[in-house]
Amino acid sequence: MPRIWKFGDSVNTDDILPGKFAPFMAGEDVFQTFAFHYIRPEFAAEVRPGDLLIGGKNWGLGSSREYAPAALKKLQVGGIIAPSFARIHYRNLLNLGIPAFEADLTGSLNDGDEVSLDIATGRLTRGSDVFQLPPAPEFLREALAEGSILAFFKKHGRFPGERNPGE
Amino acid sequence: MTLPALQPQTMAERILSMRGGKTVYAGDLAVVEVDQVMVVDSIAQSFIERMERDLAAVPKYPERVSIVIDHVAPASTVSVAQAQKEAREYAAATGVQLFDVGRGICHQVLMEEGLARPGWIVLGSDSHSTTYGAVAAFGTGMGATDIALAAASGKTWLRVPESVKVTFTGQLQPGVSAKDAALEMIRVLGADGATYQSVEMHAGDRFTRGERMTLANLCVEAGAKAGLVVPGGEILTDYGYDIPEWVYPQPGANYVREVVLDLDALRPRMSAPNEVDNVHDVAALSAELRGMHVDQVFIGTCTNGRIEDLREAAAVLKGRRVAPGTRLLIIPASSQVMEQAMEDGTLLTLQRAGAALGTPGCGPCMGRHQGVLAPGEVCVSTSNRNFIGRMGDKDARVYLASPAVAAATAVMGRIALPEDVLAVAGV
Ligand code: SF4
Image (cartoon, rainbow over all chains, first blue to last red; front, side, top):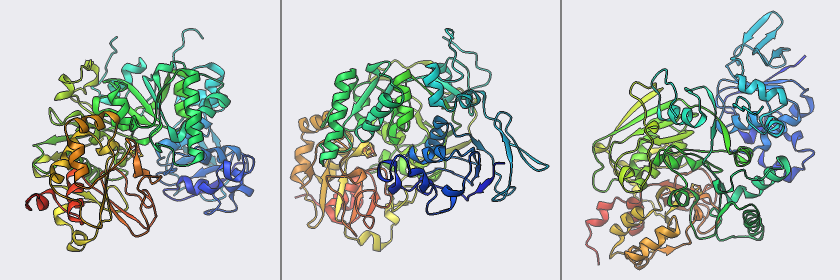
């Protein structure tokens, strides 16, 4: 079962992946092992595929570096839930196919809680507790079905939700 | 084409509805046509890698893609030179437009080349792409994958932003400029006051195109996705723009916040280290700050490197000299600005006052070359960011101000108002 990893407000892209561990410096194969290296050193070794990150406001502020979400993608993080995201980082998440939900659950969920999340409906459950996240718009559900916006575009040659009379 | 409007729309909602072929409101996702994709030298290599390796694509409309070599121009190191060489080769091979060393700063160049127009969607690989809102183009900055997807498809996806309405009243007083109005706007909004949002500026016929660029440019410092100025004044008459009716906001549109800025009451502003929204009234700065030695004054950048900015500085510097112990760097925003300043004598005035003139481009704005700061040094700059380490060493301090305040500071060697200098007769 996916578990919760809880963070605070204003987690920046340097927290997610410090600049000195960028792929071209640490190595394309291992850079993800430095995710949250300074603020949660155990994260990369212990995170399991599908685990969810809960954050406070302004998640992902700072540089537009795409290798920060790329590290989380490589670790197969199942999604990020925060009351607000920095704009460029939010786009990078969706381009790479990491579901991002805007909701504040920092007061309701705890580190290590076992949960399950239905991406399509936005229903998050922990035992008998149910949290309704704002469901991903149709556009994103379509994209996530192919893995990411980038993957969707590669396959269909258009963006999800775009009218394409030829298809 | 007309679209059904169910409720009145903001500028952002109208432009994105029209360009996506579907009526959308704040919070909706829209897929829209992109009229211009701008790639700067700093990310050219990542852009090429995304295009060739990840997407195996070529630009769908090469004439809608520009590469501008401006952030480190001319190249400062061999690796920068190599990256720029690859950018030139890519442009030659694909037919995208290349603006090489010396042409100027990306945002200024696109505007001069008519590559940002009312109602256009312009994506730049640089956060200050909000600048295009000066002419009611929806300009916004994005990362390398987004930029590559837009180049490959001719489109992009956007979440339609909520809008903050900023209304300007009154008139700028002598010695006060659009930069002061822009800094005041950032002070009022706050550094994250418009995150995700569009700042919609209502200025009537006030402000030239250059002044509108300064205002739209600074909007990103409040976290904004776009900074759109309602067309008016010389925008309507002087540039031959075709201004579609659907770029204007509709009465009754929904705003998350409304702010009124009174220009009559505005006095010169200065943003102190290390946040852009740390804005003060220059006249009310502490005696300690006013007396502090200033090592470098920098006039230039996409915020304030235009002809009107250089003239504003020249008016203060004419017949005067830069104070001993202070250095003044002036870098015109583009080759066109440089030519204008040569023709009307502005450049000669600046040179005679002791300025060091640089090649049109970003210069030391982001601390890579051409005037970076040593530990402990103080710089008064007309740029847009004063973050720690932005213009050189992490212990250097950058104060942001208008060209007139910067010029007065250069003459006095300490933070000064234009009137402090103009009160002393020129030599
Ligand atoms: S002048 Fe400065 S802010 Fe403007 S594009 Fe260049 S580096 Fe960015």
